[in-house]
Length: 262
Length: 262
Image 1 (cartoon, rainbow over the protein chains, first blue to last red):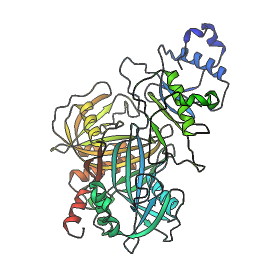
Image 2: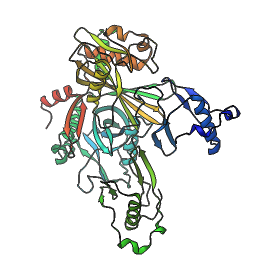
Image 3: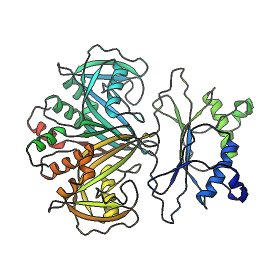
Image 4: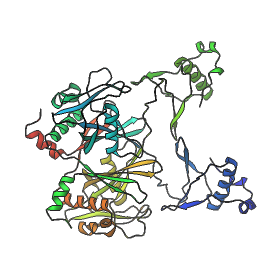
């Protein structure tokens, strides 16, 4: 949407309202339209406002979502330093192990493992605005009916071009089961069961692929209490959103209690 | 772009080529256009192809980038399980500490800390397709001229609505400096220096905010060799892309060498 300033007679500026803006920390302005308005009215307001903001060159499309479009214009003569659009999808894999050294595994209805007989950890996508630990608990319950509590992030994996140009971050999470009776979801899950952990890690698809084998070894070490991952510490931002820090809390506590820290 | 099948006379199907498709693992088809073509030709091909694919209802916009638009259509009568668009931006903070217990810090030209006198760790954005460890090394060199090698991810933080509806993942990385002379980038960086690590962590903005204070304590513990984060193990996918697993390699090595693992 390039706005042609020539279309706005100079004396019209005084006759119409301007769009309400808030300044941001980067020398820009934000416009938020709270109520829907006629597109012609909006057009008039925008043209007049832009005259006011003294934007003399074109805007470009920054990114689009189903419900909005962001246009940007960089005023300084330098290269723009605007933040890029979201670059990563985020997923979780859930390592849920019970007191009988059995791990919760599934076979999926679709995807690359369909029909291979491979038993894998329940996996899923972390939604926009969703905490990793919440997503892990949700996905396990959706796929298997098992209720869990979050323990820690054991490892994470970054890969690229998982989805067109986008990259992917996959967090392997350990959860403690709070129930045992499986009720599988039929839509995505072919089968679900509790499987001896050594049987899970001995599957050929696990042994064959270095990173899958490493993840299985991490899960085994964790189950033998010989491994520490990152556990969550949640706080709340000024705007009321949850912020969660994941770190090696065991090491930090030991370090702090040894008295070397302020 | 809704395709009106009424516009395609039935007998035209035999007269024109169809778009080449590849089946995916989810019962869908992918179309890749390798060379540019006339939009009218493309329109004809698409209409005929769609007749062929027997899509009877509308497509919807899945996501857009400057250089492409993805339209999707879910054939089964169930709710769609298409992967969502990228949901997270990813950033890094770099903890670079030298043998004199000095940490590399900067003051920025813009943003919420502008003009506050606060010294912060160099930070930056991880691009699409870029490894976290590569991004950390790149950002430190861009902002300060200091060359580094990657050590490990000390912690990470997830927050929401950082950028409209998108969420944010921020990885605090430790790096070892390979040079000492600072050459700051003028565009984004107001000042850069090596600062005693205790002075950095004692700054009021650090002490005041629980998560910043935790991060500073983690950095102190790491510098005293009392903390283990996640170190990277890289592998290559079938398509030649790098996949990197980050995990507590110290714990895993100890566990494996203790002989309890297969």
